[in-house]
Image (cartoon, rainbow, N blue to C red):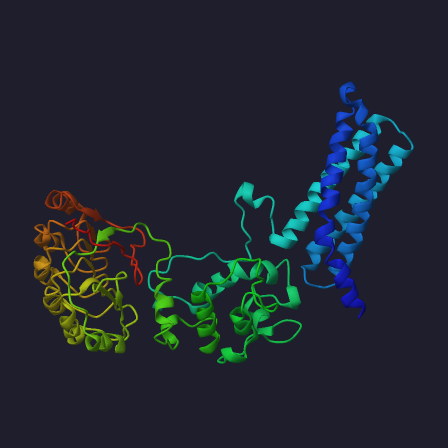
Length: 471
């Protein structure tokens, strides 16, 4: 009961602490202005300000001490902040005493300078406790909290580590402020895998393999208005996709070292995983949807592709044109490429990167007459297969990264007048061939790479509706 009462009054600290900060800093400024005859009349106001500021500083120090008893904060940082806060209260009392005794202006100015510095340092430490280490200085020096990990681009989500690449960045941005190094509400610390699995004062928050019984999954799924909902409603919230990823990670065993490809993936979670792929994109090309009307894609044909793990969706609302992404399809090779034939009119965006297809598959792809974007990166294609693509007159984007194609093979496509971008990083194209390629493709951006080439996930093609013709 004693602890709960202490916590109740301690919570008033965050309300009261702003009073001494504002009032004492203002009093110090008044004190310095008094040195000028022009502002000598501020003497009475300065004394009143120091009196009120001193009372507020004492009350703030007491409530701050009570709040520290909760154990929700880093002990070392709390201890430093506490003693600086007590120092502010003591020096405030000293200033009040100096004004009552009407001591010299010089002595009061010296003590007020010390008080001003103490208030700034104490406020900075308090901000670090609430918002993270280096709260004041990180915006100036660009410092970051080294206990956290920054989200990095994910070229291939199936090769990403489920925890460090997907789940941990979510916890960092939405959970660490209350459950990190400096602050551990409910005795729960989430920035360390061992402490995360240990749980908080009410026990474990994760039951590996059972998201329904895991408190962590329950809390993030509650309505925002619920008092137990996490993160708190006034904090940045998890998206539905991020909540789904947390449930998926826990349901598949809450592994800290397994890759995404090693975990079971339902049809519902695949789009959420794909959306993470290459979160830092270099550029998004803008294309219009073809104006030619097409029939709706065969549901049976789409279903067969989804059965082998492909993601097939419309490229935009109110259109029958579709895209297909095979990044989550397992063992997709030339023997299955015929599954695309029934969709030859509707497919305008095809992502086959990192699959096992070869040159023979390009004979079928060449029949996709409306294709605008094609990703063949890290496949087994060669110059011989590229020759089949000469029929794709609407092709705008071609990704050949990591393939064995040469400049001679690429030059076979020079008559594709709509081609805007070709990506040739890590191919057999030699440096001496670049001038020839630029001459052969004068209106095409030829990218030699040296960085993560965009491998857009699901619907990353920005599309525009067909232009309407006025009657």
